[in-house]
Length: 211
Image 1 (cartoon, rainbow, N blue to C red):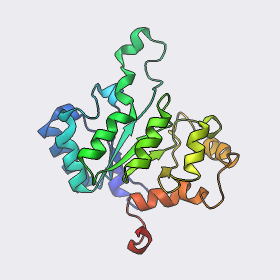
Image 2: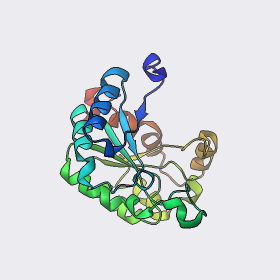
Image 3: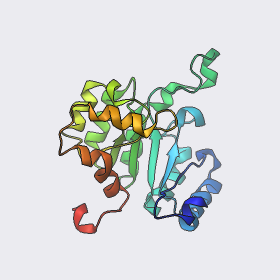
């Protein structure tokens, strides 16, 4: 509701449990149509589902039809770390290769792989490089800890598909940006990562800039 009241500065993403079935689909449609929600965050390890489980497919279909974005947590999570049994959280569900199936089955769905995907960084790069509507965000890690192959791809093959993110309050935007300044990113690529790529993905740029 707050985002809907201030759409000039806030772009809302929401979360819907894919196990809700038809009720989840109705919820997603209401969030987009009534509140201007532009994307949906999934945390497979926390929500206890594999991204390519057919249980989630009706929800993906609705998100694709609505023109919204599906954002998936990928890689290890700090939630449950050090707790016996990891608090019941299964890391395997956050392997980006499971999202590759989603990109195949919903070819027009815009997908973001959230975070450097430890220990599956190469898998994330492969999926984003292979599937035209799969992006990677850089939230959750300080840039000084980025794997070298992530920096290399962000500077070259994936320069138009990598997105800024801080994962506040885990990392403050100020700290992230300060560390990003020290990263060896080409000057012409920096504005793409910090703003332009996300603006294009969310349809905030004029049509002629999307070509």
